[in-house]
Amino acid sequence: MDALEALAAEVGETLKAAGQTVAVAESSSGGLISAALLGVPGASKYYLGGAVVYTGKARMVLMDLPREAVAGMRSASPPYAMLLARTARERFGANWGVSETGAAGPTGNGYGDAAGHSCIAISGPIELAITVETGESGRAANMVAFAAAALELLKRGMG
Image (cartoon, rainbow, N blue to C red; front, side, top):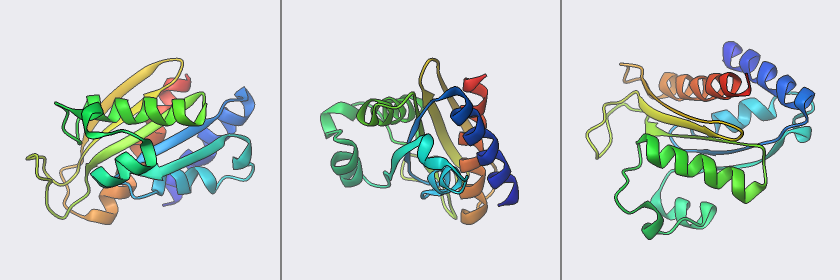
């Protein structure tokens, strides 16, 4: 967790220095992206809000994305991650939206992805999406790895 905290501090300081804001929509990381960002002193200057979008119902209620908006997409995929990142950014009026969706473990998901699979996206002045495969089945370790990958992607996007 120390590495995650250090990374969040770096991202938070960059956001504050740039006068930029972020919103988060995460799934298998279970709120760790938001928790890491909120653990930085002064987070209220850049963190606008977030949601743990773990189920279809959560997607509809928290993100206002009905089934029709995700027709033809599977949840642990780059297009779905990008939709969540864009939606978080737009709904909160943030400079950046960050999303994560995957299978923390100990088993895979119903789409055939193994434990340790996650798709992560950022939406802002640039948009990027990546797929992470940890090759591990440990749920807690994967959750931390997914959160770290999301923060690394945001750091990369901010340049």
